[in-house]
Image 1 (cartoon, helix red, strand yellow):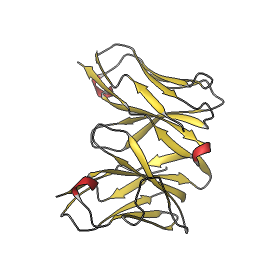
Image 2: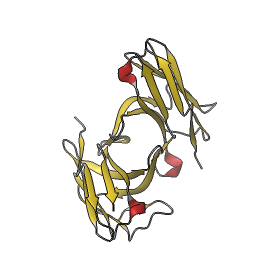
Image 3: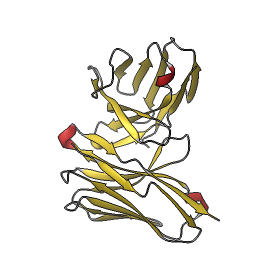
Length: 113
Length: 116
C-alpha cells in the first residue's frame, strides 16, 4: 500500500531564505507526483506536476524534482516571501490503487518578514 | 480553464440532519469526481470516487449509506451527509478529472461542515 511522508511537518524561515521541502513515497510505481499549496481553510492550488518519466519541473521560484527509484521528491522555494506561508502537500497518482491521489501529511511553512 | 466550484462553502447544522454538498466543474466535463475529507492539521483522505452514471466506489471504512454520492451529469456530483453527527464535522473537498486527461484532478475550494 502506497504511503506518502513529508518532512518536516512545520518549518519557519526568515524572508529571503531558500528552502527545501521533502516528500517520500514507498512504492515507486507512480504515474505522477504533484505539489499543492493550501492556505488555511481553503482548497488546493496545484503548483507543479511531474510525470513519472520526468526528473523536474520549474515554475517561477519553485522547482520540484523527482527521483522515482529512491521514492523521493523535493520542492525547492527560492527567495522565500511572507506570501509563501501556507501548507504544502505532495501527492502521488497511484494506478495500482485505481488511479487514486495519495497525499502526504503536508509541511506547514511560515515565512517571517 | 478547469474550474471546480463547491456549494456551500460552509454550513452549520444540527445533529441528526442531512446536508448536501455540490461539486461542479464549470468549464469542462468531468467523467470522474473524487470526494475527500480533511480534519484539522491532517491531510486529505479520499472518501469515494464517483463516475458519471454509475455507483460511487467508497474507500475502506467510509459508510456508503451515511455519505451518499450522486454523479448524475458530467458537471455535477453531490455528497449528502445523512444524519450528521458532530464527528462528521470536517472540511470536505471535491476534485474532478477531465474527460480527456484522467491523470490530472482539479480541486474545488472545499466546504466546511460543522455539526452542532
